[in-house]
Amino acid sequence: MSGTLVLAGTPIGDTADAPPRLAAELEGADIVAAEDTRRLRRLTQALGVRISGRVVSYFEGNEAARTPELADALSEGSRVLLVTDAGMPSVSDPGYRLVAAAVERGIRVTAVPGPSAVLTALALSGLPVDRFCFEGFLPRKTGERLARLRESAGERRTLVYFEAPHRLAAALAAMAQAFGADRRAAVCRELTKTYEEVRRGTLGELAAWAEEGVRGEITVVVEGAPAEAPGTVDAAELVRRVAVREAAGERRKEAIAEVAREAGLPKREVFDAVVAAKNAETA
Image (cartoon, rainbow, N blue to C red; front, side):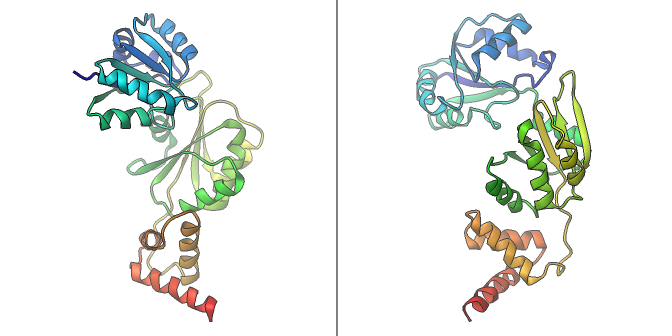
């Protein structure tokens, strides 16, 4: 009989937020795979829990190599508990590879739901929450970061990002450049911790504020793009948007379809604009 993989949410700040089932899973697991074993030790001490199973490290540096080992243990009947430093495993943290391996082998995967910085920041932001998308961490290099943001410039859903404090000012400045300085946003810092802060404003205002330096764990929530009335985007802008998506690696067909959706236009109209621009270049 195969085992079970359990993905367990851990507190993002306040250990009192630990789900009640977490203690039982920590005590009963055959193997606890932790992103940082030292943080795991501090968590178990805070919860008054004693782990009886084997503890192994499972982080970005060894995730690929350790996944087969854990998958074999699951196949042999072990109950493997996966925890990361904070929040849910596999959400910008290790976990996806192991889940995929377990699913491929037909092994049961379940979860102990817990705190999430994404949902907490979204709820506190004051921005629309009916539709949103999680974008994770932005690229570190300036050009790659701006290109990624420009891909999302027309996204109407609320956007959620993780960012390192020392890169926050640059990231917000790039967002202001790609989305417009007047786009509303919220910077959520040190969520659930003693010095929790939610700073709301326009991207321009937040970029200026962040230049003074910001500390702590950061989640940024950005308002989605406003709906565009059909016919308000000219042909040159349509061509530019398609080109940006193609430069980012999208096939032209998909790029045209997405630009048409964002602009509220038939795909044929965007296609004709791209073809006309190409013909003008070669004329």
